Length: 59
Image (cartoon, rainbow, N blue to C red; front, side, top):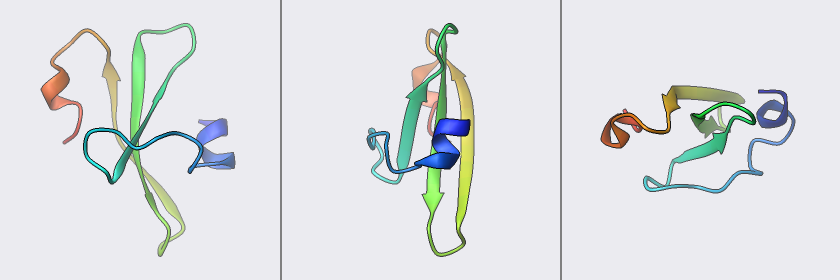
């Protein structure tokens, strides 16, 4: 989370262009988030297990 807060544009955009995704080191999870620059916020959409239901990753 510290890396996302420090530089939210660092991680690439994924399937849906408004969402970004980062892999959590040492754990089988991805953090899916969206940058809201006009509100100066980061919206965490989901913390998703890499092996479970990939179609529900972007809600």
